[in-house]
Amino acid sequence: MRYGLLGRAGWCVLASGPGRPLTGGVARGYLRLAGRLAYVGLCGAWLLAWTGCKPQAPEGSAPRRPAQSTSSVSTAALELSGVFEDVTRRAGLEFVHQLADGKLSNIVESDGAGGAVLDFDGDGWMDIYLVNSGPAPGLSDAPPGTPRWPNRLFRNRGDGTFQDVTEQAGVAGHGFGITAAAADYDNDGHTDLYVVNYGGGILYRNKGNGTFQDVTAQAGVVHHRGGISATFLDYDNDGLLDLFVANYLVFDPKIKPPPGSQVPYAGPLFYQPEFNLLFRNRGDGTFEDVSQQTGILVPGHRAMSVTSLDYDLDGDADVYVSNDATPNLLLANDGRGQFKEVGLRAGVAYNQFGEAAGSMGATVADANGDGLPDMFVTRFGMASLYLSVAAGFFEDRIQGSGILDVSAQYTSWGGNFIDYDNDGDPDLFIANGHAHFMVGMPPLLLENRSRAIFANACSAGGPFFHARPNARGSGVLDFDNDGWLDLIVTTLGDRAVLLRNRGGLTNRWLVLQLEGTRSNRDGFGAQVRLSAGGRVYSAQHRCPTTYVFQSDPRLHFGLGTATRVERIEIRWPSGQVQTLTDVPADQILKIREPGQSRWAR
Image (cartoon, rainbow, N blue to C red; front, top):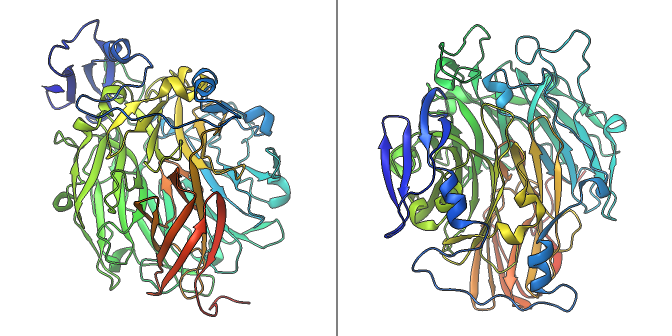
């Protein structure tokens, strides 16, 4: 694929391979990179005309034999009905995102809202918490007296339906909400909830009886910055989960786009940046702000999301921050409580074309099966597929992956690795939407044909992949515990969508639910290696945050045709190594770290 540079605004696809000249008109768009004000030509309509919705492998990739179907749902039937079905209304997931002024009038409104997947009542079924934005003076103006629509907590009944328990749980929230992160920060066995608001946040402690308590002030996590993302991690490996809050920018309603810019609001570089925050868990129910002494304060950036991972496999939690219109940050943990910014050195600061295009979020998996963590980063512009080439170093292989053939014409927000067909190769879901106007874009489903070579699979995805929602956040979950990964997608000013994976193929699976005893109770930071059917699978157990959404925290492995797992090795954050052998497939397996729990009460 060949690219031409359009000034400082970005790159435009000119041709795709030999003998495929640019045809059709040039779609118009706005790149968020240059303050979202640079008016450029985006090559758009020709891509859809060229690829259509037919799954195509990039040139040079070997075709793969389709999996054999079961008697219940044939492969042909899945092609007709789609892998995913919209079960939102049938499931009782009634949620609409509130765009209080009814239009996109500023950059913060454009970011939308998401939520988190969690098991708040500990019954083994994943519940869903969705965050609302609502009216906010100067930020999202609405007629006087306009009520804020609440955040919603949906309890999974275990029969394919959900019950709205927001009121009795006490988690309706307040303020201009963006997203949430969920984890057991006090190690009492109950998953707690942190809600990210622009202008602050809310820490809800799970009381274990179906209700939550707002402990924001007494826990010491009050702040008034422009929050946009958060994640839990045990950065100092003391068995207590700490809280990293990513902040966006200092919004000033007086800042307007220059006359004639043809966009409704000014871009990110017109606003002052915000510093991110790191709160260390003291272990007594309170946190302390350690942002300064840990070295995470890197000036000049406007975060869009935060992702925790052990990028160099040295046993401690590192942090990747996706930024809007500035280079992304990789904060390397030295294991002694200090972070150092190494994004440029590690190869994950810019995309493959040298741009610091507006990044939305990162999703993490071993995309090419080499045992090392890889990242896919959604962007306003060309996305990135960062593949580890050695522990601690990455190369952006997006151009040869087949992803840009499908995604380059869209603005991508949510992005998730998801092994939707359980063949053992992480596939991709991408949520798209217009950044400046209430205009939708089709979501994308890309099949990993092995070794991080992707093909357009939207024709097999189902009717949702032919719709044009103005999507923002997206999360992966298995809400019906059938071993086939489902999706939840939030949209701007519209309903959330729950997509059930129909399954139906013969591929097998295994889900691991970890519980720490010497490590933090969630087991975040554990490294897992699994051997099955002649393959070795690797995964990191972590708080799975992406752009404005946190996915199902359990570890899911598609096993292909393997009916048993020969060996599971878990390296816990405490240093313990646990091994299990001869494990049957097709089950949700709860694994407890060996030893007496430090957290028993």
